[in-house]
Length: 390
Ligand code: GDD
Ligand code: MN
Figure 1 (spheres, rainbow, N blue to C red):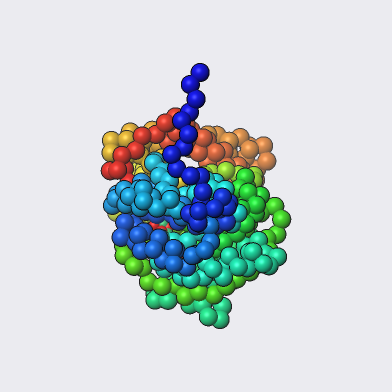
Figure 2 (cartoon, rainbow, N blue to C red; figure 1 turned 60 degrees about the horizontal axis):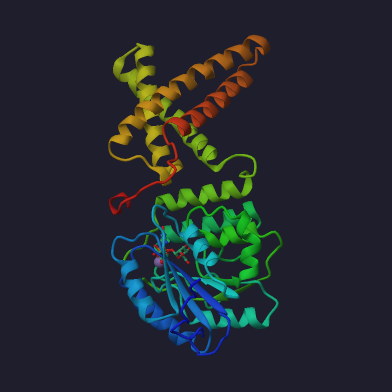
């Protein structure tokens, strides 16, 4: 039996001693090629003397970020790059990064230098010396600042903060912060309850912790990006609502069904608006106007579900046409089931509201189940190419 040759390099940390890693800084990246080198340089500066590593988690960037990170990690043992293919999401990237390290403390920060790296030393000090589990960089306390934000983004951030405080009872001044450090043991206690949806990993971690975390908040000033563009878009807001749904009713109802139901409710409004307009244009032929309204509502529901509910399995190209036809066929059967159930209950009880709602419930569940099975089937192994990325 052959034996492995001895290692040609010493198993020591970067300080040259067999000391375990104390801190892993997890940095999610999507198209940040011009920021990562400068960030690593600054981490070396502020964390001098600490046994740390940087774990970049790249979601298959199209600008060469992963290649740049591999280049950095080839000559710097403190830099690692995990690359995810076929998935996309800030929270899930952070979770993968946190799972990949054995460091005692875990920090999460953005790659674009908006988060003030100088705060890392204070965060680490607090975790080392104080009875706290989580240190959050906050923009909403003395000494903190949101920087150059449009008033609209500030308002949305304030609203989102209130929602997590009221709906999840989070006692954090800045739950939307993407800059924090925690004990790995605290992360591991939360990990099985994480939703990993969207952008707000801090909200997810705190809400998933089985015991209340002892939190310390430190102020920082949100800076402007060094290079590249923000990835925050309207879908991030939707994902946040889905995270709140998952954290509140998710135990009873799948989040995709919540999303499907909300889009269905919006479809009713589309239907009524189109019906009103069509009646004006077509004249008194109600059946024709109703047919137009049903068709347009179904098309709008299909595209919204494809973009939001099934973003991770989004149909593209010809798949959209085939998917739309299957969606309409499945929902037509759902409409028949809806009317059938409502009529049956109505014949027994005579209560129009209860019968109508029961029909809607059965129709929605049918539509959800049938379209999940027929339209957005999850392939066993999904292949993606760079052109799939947005
Ligand atoms: N792996 C991965 N996958 N990384 C992503 C993705 C993704 O889908 N989307 C964004 N990122 C990375 C970016 O490359 C960046 O390093 C970081 O996540 C934050 O993204 P930005 O696009 O810069 O977001 P922002 O500046 O508008 O908002 C950030 O800061 C806010 C204030 O702390 C986020 O961290 C927000 O969650 C936070 O509220
Ligand atoms: Mn940013």
